[in-house]
Each structure stands twice: as C-alpha cells, then as structure tokens.
Image (cartoon, rainbow, N blue to C red):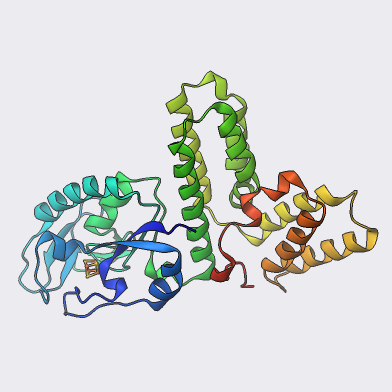
Length: 315
Ligand code: SF4
C-alpha cells in the first residue's frame, strides 16, 4: 500500500521543538500509523521564527478571533502568526494531504478545546489554535484529529476511515471521471456512509440519482462535501447493527437456517456490546468470499483499513 501523506504537529514525531526544549513523541503515531502514513511535519511556532526554548504562549480575548501572546512578558504574535499561517496553507496545498494530526491543547496547533483567557481572568475551553483553526477553515474537507482524541479507539477508528475514504476520493478525482464512475464510487461507499449517517446516505443517494441535472464540478464538490460531512459522524453500535442486518439480508437464500441463526446471534451479541465489530465482520466476509457476492465484495465498509491497525477490535 502506498503511504498516505498526513500533516502532523512536529513535536508528536519526537522533534525537540517545544517551548521548553522538549518533545511530545507519540509512539502509536510513529510506530503503528507510521507504517501506513508518510508525515508532513509542521511546527507553527518554530517555522514562524521563534527559538527553542522560548517563552510559552496562550490565547486571550474573543474566542472567534483570539490573540496569541507570551505568558510572562505579554508579547503579541497574532499578526505575524496569522500571516505565516496564510503562506503555509498555500504551500500545503501542494502536499497532497489526506489528513492532519494536531497537538492538543496548543495555542498554535490545537483544533479545539484550547484554553482562552478573557479580561475577567477566567479561562474558557472554547479556543482553537491560530494555525489549527486556520487549517480547518482553509481545508474544510481534510480529516483532522488531535493526539488526545487519537487515543480514544472510537475516535481513532473514525479518523482513519475518514482519511482512507478521502484518499480514495482524491484518487478517483485524478481520472477523467464520468457520471457512471461516480455511481460506481458511490455504490462502493454506500454501506460505510450508512454506518456513519443514514441521513447523509439518503442525501447522497438522491444527489447521485439526479446527477445529470448538475454541472460536473458542482456535482463533485457537493458530493465530496456531503460525504465528508457524513464521515465526521460516528459509526455507533446501533448504526453498525443496522448495516450488519442489512448485509445479512443478502444471504437469506444461500445460508442454511442454522448458519442464518448463527449470523444473527453474532450480530445480536455485537449489538449488546459483548463482542467487537470485527467478529460479525469476519463472519460476513467469510460468506462474501464463499458466495462471491459481487455488490458486497467491493464495499469499503467490509475492508475499510489494514487489519494490522486492529481497529474494530474493541468492545
Ligand atoms: S504544539 Fe505545535 S507549535 Fe507547539 S511545539 Fe508542537 S508543533 Fe510546535
């Protein structure tokens, strides 16, 4: 598998770029995800021109347009950082990024929940970092997460699925595509999007059915917007159970009553939280191969990420 290019806050790779001269090496990122992802590191504070070590900074003022200032001496770096971020985002357009992992809690790199101090002195957690916020506004479709959320198995799984579909979508756009190609892409992504959001599944279905009414570029950008918006929503146990039961329906003629009962029992156990998603998924994949079920064979939902990442293994 060709490595996928992912932006990352430099300190998470173990580079000593933090204000205190340290780093925030994350071994899951480097040793596990590093097998599949190729990193494009960004350290806003150092690339903007600050030294290591340096005075730490914080956000102050209005959460909608915060200012970034040094904690002890109050030096305001807001204008310089915003200018640097604008130039950096233009450079990143050429990096073919399919995602970004940001350092949490950073007034420069964070993408949410950053402490912001107001005139009353009481901080709220409503801030976004100067660069992290600018990135998500500039690239609204690119999947993002921070290292804190990455360690929650559900959020991690969601992020990786989102990245892999975004990558497939970018590959798809590289070809001279026709409406029939979009229909084929949509057919393969259907069950995955259903597991994240039945509402987006239905909206995308209607969009593709009326594809001929749209201009090519408008159709594709609308499709991508709705698809990525849907993938941000979590695939819950309830939504996954719905998809698994839908898939089980494809085998009603091929399976013996005993096999059918076993499959439904396994889905029920998953629904009750006794076993991880990987269990019904493995059984279903076995039947997909055995009965050569062509529609299911190509579903991203059944093979969304490399097995070595051990996603879908948690209860
Ligand atoms: S959090 Fe961001 S600005 Fe701070 S050291 Fe890490 S990459 Fe640099």
